[in-house]
Amino acid sequence: MHKDLAYVLLEEEAIQKRVKELGRQITRDYEGKELVLIGILKGAVVFFSDLIRHVELPMSMDFMAISSYGNATKSAGVVRILKDLDKDIVGKHIIIVEDIVDSGLTLSFLKDNLVSRGAASLRICALLDKPERRKVDIKADYQGFTIPDAFVVGYGLDYAERYRNLPYIGVLKPEIYTKD
Ligand code: IMP
Ligand code: MG
Image (cartoon, rainbow, N blue to C red; front, side, top):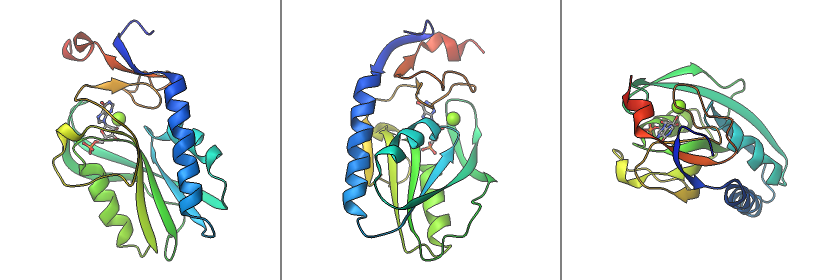
């Protein structure tokens, strides 16, 4: 385990097993349809790349990058698009792939934004859900794990851009983010 972690919350094997199940569920639900999976940079990149290998359908991928103002561990709710989609999504079946639903502000912004562009359908697939911190009423259609209210890193999730490369998800020691 990485020395900056208090404990491992989700082991690599458990994550891989769940991601495979989510991919299979999406495969069943979208049979006969053509899908566009939209990954939200950068946190969802690791989850996204594992997930798509379990989606056995014709699909394309696109990416958006979002910034929410606030400090490193709490989002302030003001969302800005840093990188937009390459292609338009009119008439497409969309799944937004996100790392975590925390306050829900990012996803609620994204959902409204993408629906307004004329997608045929839109669902959300989020690896993690922290329901205790929700500020707006939003729920992922596909969800990996419900987790307690703790700041987690690894498997794409960062603190100050670090720890994204850990293959498991762990809870950061509080002294790591309270010292600065
Ligand atoms: P929301 O808008 O509050 O739902 O925040 C969503 C974004 O905040 C995620 O895409 C993450 O980038 C970040 N985030 C929220 N909770 C955590 C966490 O525990 N660890 C790392 N990043 C987090
Ligand atoms: Mg982040």
